[in-house]
Image (cartoon, rainbow, N blue to C red; front, side):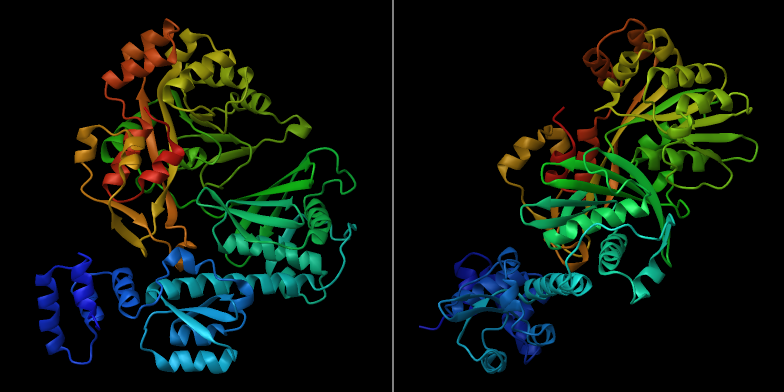
Length: 569
C-alpha cells in the first residue's frame, strides 16, 4: 500500500499530526507545490528530513551529505558539470555494471532518461537532498578542474633540478601566470602559490608521501590537502623554490631557510621558506605573510567587553611590560599590532624590533632582524635605547639577553610589548624566570600576561543547530552555571563557501592575568605556576576554556573546536 510522505514523517516522529494538518491546509492555497516544499517553508522540516522520507516512500536508498563526497572521479568525468547542476544529479560510483546516481526528486523521469542516454548504461538512483547534491557538485567538480590545471601545467614532461637564470627575489604573479614561454615547473609553483593566496592560506606544505607529492594549505589554522602533483615533479618544485629564495640548490642534506616576495594585483606577500631533509625527500614549508596595510583593531579580535576594558586600560599605562603568549600561529603578533594601532600618537616615538616584520604600520619605526649580519634582537635593542623611544614592541623574547633588556627598559619609564611561547598565562611568568630573569625583576616589570588562542568560526552559510552527545559535554567539562548560559549549540554542516569544513575565519579567545599586588608578591616569593593560577582564579581570572565557552554560548564556535585548541581547566 502506497504511503504518503506526510504519513511517513509522522510515523517516524519527525513531524506531528498537527503540523501535517497545517501543511496540508497551506498546500491547498499554493496549488502545484509539493508537500515537502511546504513543510520546509513552514519550518517544520529540513531538506535532509524530506529526502529521508522520500527515500522510504520510493523504496530507494538514502545518501547523507558526507557520503556524496565519496564520489569517484572517474565516474564524475562521465557526466558534465552543467548537466549535473541543471538536473540536480550526482554520479557516485559504478557497482556491478550499474551507475549509482544521487537525485533529489524520485519523480524526475526526464533526468533519469537523460542520464541513460548520456551514459548508455543502466543507472540505480539513490535519494539525497538538493542542497547536499548542489554542495557536492560544487566541491567535487572544483577538485577535478584543479587537477586538470595541474596536469595541463606539468604535461608529460620529466623533471630534473636545473638552475634558473632569474635571480630576482620579487616574483610578479601576473607576469608569471600570463607568459606562455615559462617552464612548466615555474607555472606549477606559481599555481600552488596563487591558489594559496585565493584560499586565504597562511602556510603551504609540500612533501613526498609514498609515490606522490602532497600539497597542503593551512587554512584557518588547519591543514587541508588541495592537490597532488606526480612524484617526478618534486625535485623541480624544490629547486624552483630554492632559486626564488636564493638558497643552495645542490644542498639536499641540511636544513635551509630563505625568503622571497610575491606581487599580485591585490597584494604583496612576504614568503618565508623552510626546507627540511626527510627520509622521503626534502619537505618545504612556505609561510605567507601579507604585507599590505594592517586592517585589524582591538574590537575585531574577539575580546569580550570586560576583557577589552582591562586590556585597553593596561596598554595605556606609561611604563611596564605586557606579554602575550601562545604557540606559533595563535595570533600574538596580530594582537600586538592592533595594540600599537590603538595607542598610536604623534606625541610618542614607537619602535618595533621584529623577525619578521609581518605588517607595515604607518607612524611606527619598524626594525627587521638580520642575524646573518649581526643585527640581532639584543644588538638592536641596545641601539634603540639611544633613540629616545617611548613605547617598544619586541617581536619575541627568545633568550636571557633579550628578556633582560626588555625588563630593564620597562623599569625605566617605558611601556614594552612582547610575545613568548607558553601554554597559558601563569606558565608565562615561570617561563620568564626559567629564561634567567630574577623573580624580583619579573614581578616589578609585569603589568599583564595574556594567553590567547584562535578558534575557527562556524560558517554562517551552513550553520545548523544540534544537540551535543553526552561524551562531548563530558569532554567540555563545563560547570552547570556555564552550561546554563548556552541556550543552543551550533555546528557547520559544510558547504562550498567553507570548503566543506563547517568553519570560515577565526576569532580569538583570551586569558588575562593581571599582576595585582597579591600576584606580584607571589612572583617575588618564586611560587610555582599552580599557586599563581589558583590565586588568579580567586581574583577573577577567566581561563582560555571558559573564554571559549562564552564563544560557544554566542553561537560563534563549536565544542569540538574548543576541545582542539584548549586543555581542561
